[in-house]
Image 1 (tube, rainbow, N blue to C red):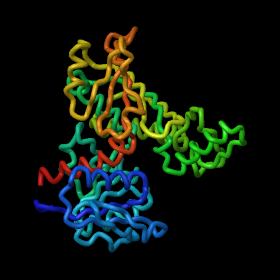
Image 2 (image 1 turned 90 degrees about the horizontal axis):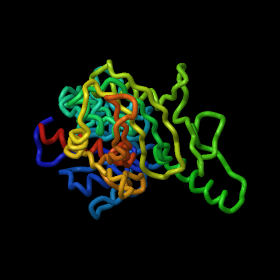
Image 3 (image 1 turned 45 degrees about the vertical axis):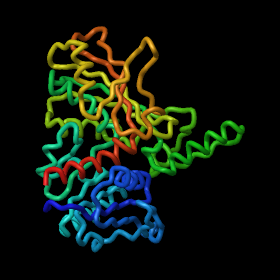
Length: 345
C-alpha cells in the first residue's frame, strides 16, 4: 500500500453491532477517508447509515465489492470473511478481520496494537483481530510479560451478552421484563443459538460460551488459550480459562491470576500497569475503587484493578480486568490497527 492523504475504506457487516461501532469510531477519530463503502448481507441491502452528516446506502457484499478499497474491515461473521476476504486482498485491500476465520492461520498476524504491532507489518493481506476476551487480557498482561515473563495464567471471564449479538441483548431485556412481570420466560438464543438446549440469562450466569470441544472446554475458552500463546509468540505459557456469560449488556470482566517467571515488586507492577499503553489502573480498595463494566462501557481503554499478591505463590498476582467488548474487544482494536498501519506506510 502506498502512502496517501486519504484512504478508501469498506466496512463489511456495517449494520451489525461491531460494524456500527467501527463507523462511529472512524467518524469520531476523523480517520482520513476518501471514499467509504458500507457493505452487508442481502438482508441489509438498501439500509441507510449516517456518517459525517451524509447518508450512505448499504450495499450487498460481493466478491466485486472491493475495487480501489485500501482497508476492508470485516465484522460480518466467519463465513462471510472466508467467502470474501481473499477477494478483497486480490483487489489490493488490507483486510482487518474481526472473526475467528483466520486467527490461527500461521500466515495471518493476530494483532493487539499495544502488544505485538510489529507483527502486523508481516501481513500478506489479512490481519486478524483476536477474540474480545483475549484482547483485554493480553493488553493488561503485556507489561508484566515483558518485565518478568509469564509462567501460568488462570482466567475466569464474566462476559456481556452483547458479545453474542443484538438478538442476545434483546433476549436478556425481554427475559428481565418477563421475570419482573411474573410472566413465563422465553428462551431462544443463549447460550448458543445453533444448539437445541437454551438457558435463562436474566439474573443468571451461564458457564458456556460457544460449543464444547472434545476436551470439554468451550471454543471460547480454547480461543483464549491458543490466541494468547500466538500473540505473545510463546507456546510455553500455561493457560486455562473458564468463560461465563452474565446478564450484563455491555463490558466483559475477567478475574486473571498470573504466575510470573521472576520475583516481582508490587509497586513496580502497579507502575508498569499505570504506564502501559491502553491500560488504566483503577485500584483503591480503601475507597472501593475498582473497574466496573458499567463504567468501562463506551471507553477505549482496558481497566485494571484489585491488583494483589497471591497468598500462597510467591510469584502469583491476582487482578480484575474490564473492557468494553464491542470497542477495545472488537471495533476499536480494528480501527486502531488501521490507524497504525497508515503511520508506517
